Length: 210
Image 1 (cartoon, rainbow, N blue to C red):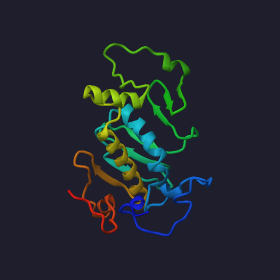
Image 2: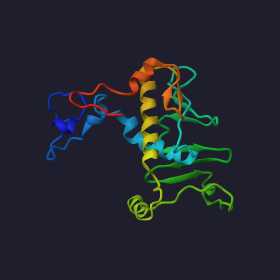
Image 3: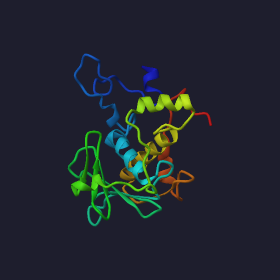
Image 4: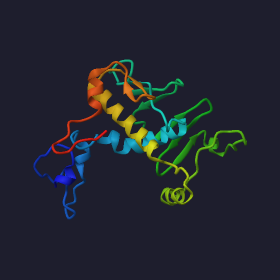
C-alpha cells in the first residue's frame, strides 16, 4: 500500500481508486488530482504526443497556454513560437488529433488516419520533404535502439515533454487564466502561483534528491 501510493497523500481504500482484479471497475485514481491528472494526462498524453511529433516539437513546448473564457475563446489554446496554435477540444472523433493546413486536414488516432479531401493522403512526398520517423512496432523499435545504441521513436525526452504539456494544460485549467511558459528553461515567466503548481508536497519519508 505504502509503495503503491508513493509520495501521494494517504487515504482510505476505495475500489474506484484501486479496484480488486475481480471487481469490474475502471481504476479512476487517474481522475483525482492527488494521484493523476484526469483525461488530459491520460488519453491527452497520447494525443499531445502525436501533435508534437507532427509539429517537430518533441524537444520543446508552447510559449502560451490560454484557457477558454466562455466568450471569444471557446477552447484551451496553446501557442508556439512558430505561431502554430493547438486547441484542446472535442471535435467529434473521440481521442484523436486534427491537423489543419492550407490544402486540407488530417485526422489521426490509434485506429484511423483520414484526410480531407480524401486524396490528400495519396500525395507523394519529394526527396527534400520532411518525413516523420517511421515505426510500425514501438516495442521492436525500442529493442532495436538498445542493440544499435540509437534513439527510439519516443525516447525519455519526448516522454518528458509530452508529460510537461499535459501538466501545463491542467495548471491553466486550474488557475483559469493565461500563462506564459519558457520551453527552453522549462519554467513559467514571472508567475509564482503557477510555478508552485509544478510540483507537489511529498508525503514523508519520500523526498526528491536533486
